[in-house]
Amino acid sequence: MADEKNHENHDSPANERRNNKLPNFLLSVKLKYVKLGYHYVISNAMYLMLIPLLGIASAHLSTLSIKDFVQLWENLKFNLVLVTACSGLIVFIATLYFMTRPRGVYLVDFACYKPHDDCKVTREVFIEKSGLTGSFSEENLSFQKRVLERSGLGQNTYLPPAILSLPPKPCMAAARKEAEEVMFGAIDQLLAKTRVKAKDIGILVVNCSLFNPTPSLSAMVVNHYKLRGNILSYNLGGMGCSAGLISIDLAKQLLQVHPNSYALVVSMENITLNWYFGNNRSMLVSNCLFRMGGAAILLSNRSSDRGRAKYQLVHTVRTHKGADDRSYGCVFQEEDETKRIGVALSKDLMAVAGEALKTNITTLGPLLAFEHFCIHAGGRAVLDELEKNLDLSEWHMEPSRMTLNRFGNTSSSSLWYELAYTESKGRIKKGDRTWQIAFGSGFKCNSAVWRAMRTINPAQEKNPWTDEIHQFPVHVPKVAPIASKS
Image 1 (tube, rainbow, N blue to C red):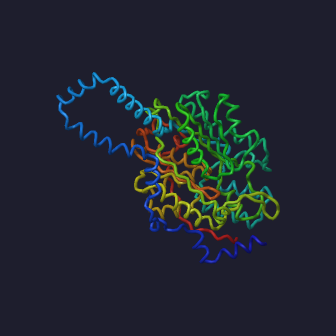
Image 2: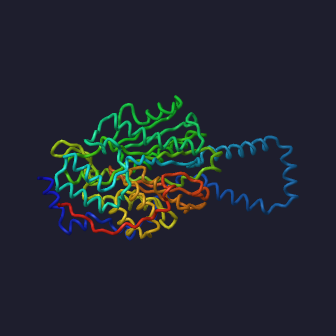
Image 3: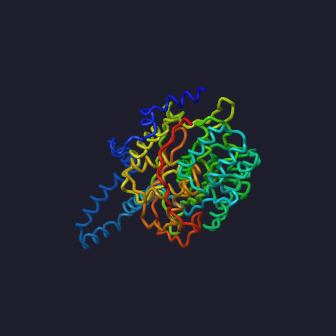
């Protein structure tokens, strides 16, 4: 009853307008990327100081004639101390430059997992099987049906077998099986595409927000592929849908201090043990949006991989709003009144996301620098608001909308299904920059910017879109948002 009253209190027109709209922050960002410029100056202070000195030296040397150089050599030839000192200084400056400059981080390739056809679930099957569980009231079955119809999800998304079974069979063994299918399926494809041996991988980062077994998911990968004993492995949990870019940022930092290394990043979510069987509507929305999926990404700092890599990592920007209580609680895993665990989505979510995005963009740089956008396919409402507030075209939003339609919200891996879509459409040209941006509980907004190292030929690519890209884009009709009350 308390939840229903809270929903009713939130449903006034004024509250709906305030909470379900992102602020038009492009008009309010005044700092104009001061943070990014400051960071650049501090990070490159030594090189910026050397530029004037090199300029003065070059200007002076340009005034010297060949006769002057000959005379200089004659003088130096008999001054061993001066020659040794100058040579040592040159070697020292060159060594300092090569040791302190940031290492290039290259995305060699990536792979997205495509579940088997027997895991496909239409909207009708979803509602039918939800009804047969006996867990949901008729009013809340109708509510889920309305959410699905307006969600942007199509008729070919995927759920794990444990959820599609009648009755559902969520258990630890089934959850592990789902994790293995998704992770190993994506990694197998990636290793085949890149022809990299598992033993050559020196860094492993796995992220999954809600499923954190012991041994960890990263340990499952190490065991399955028999990775080397000194591998640097990390397992990120509880960090929401933006954890994929956190993993990329962590791998980038590690690649700065470990030369000649490969880093494997695995991004996924697990549905089996995180299906909500209660009647709290703020928790039921997750059932309607989240679907099965995952991605594996291979990064390298090897100069030899520059020629074959698809992308170079240009920037990562992480924004955390967790110090604010409203932001911290807007996506919250908890028990409902019947002690069933679910993830509750607050009605403040849109406003919180807008503030986090505003901070992130202020730090990142001008939007016009990007040719392609991969915006986390969290749901139609968020994509609609971002399209309007960032003044993006339907073409820019197409990868996100089609990913939501075809695969649903696959959490942290959705950005990679979107990039795969862009590649399959033949849109990636050499030098193009792609902005990946994702939101997650905490509340966080994280970005990554990639520059294409070469033009991607879709005829040479194999990804989940390959056999059906000709069917997209599909028309997704505009619909009005639903009210919280049935």
